[in-house]
Image 1: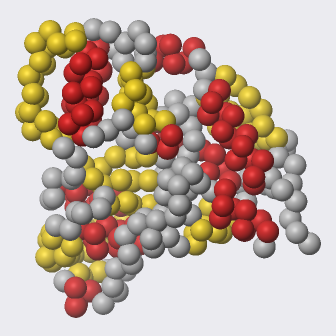
Image 2: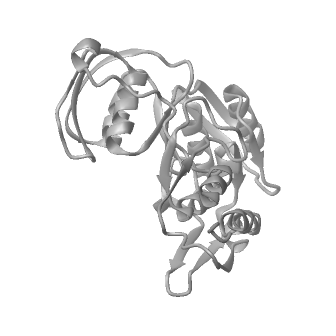
Length: 289
């Protein structure tokens, strides 16, 4: 019992879909659902809220799909044995939303769109202008320099920013669970990576736990949070340094579990590894008898 209580407090990075559970009686809500494989979606929705559509996909597939607040557009859409992520993307396209990954979350949002033209503009000024348009927190590493000559028409702001950075030789990474974005030189970033071995004494981090989840690092649970299953490895992998829009396979940091030694081998930035150590201290405690 103590382990479950600790899990509920310490699993600060685990994310579950924030949409409420959709009704199963599709006839009343304009949905026609066919029994199917969990990874493949077959369903039809008629004039249904995108929130309900995405909540159904999340519940059915077992993946976390989070829709930004205030998006309540109605859509009509049909899926025929479509992989769950493609189904999410198709639903999002119908409302001019975009889909991005943040750790284990699939986030659907309607970002600000930008139409801009830059002629030999200072790179840092362009970055700050795009961040201001979106109300986002973007930190620029010292040494990030260059000028920009580009034109964009009605493009999502982050896609625009990533295109600007790509042409200038820089990348965008997530920090603090995706709440902060940082512009860095990729070669310099990789040179700052460290490799540590972290051991477990009391738990097996690949074992499945069950507890309450939260949606923000260090933040309180959102309304509607429910118990869910996870492993401590899931919690730690959510900390890895990554670029926005990538899942675990796109992480810049790496984490491997050695079951024989009951230890993880982590390569990442030192602050990330220190944070992992703090999470492990909370989770790796003897079970109450």
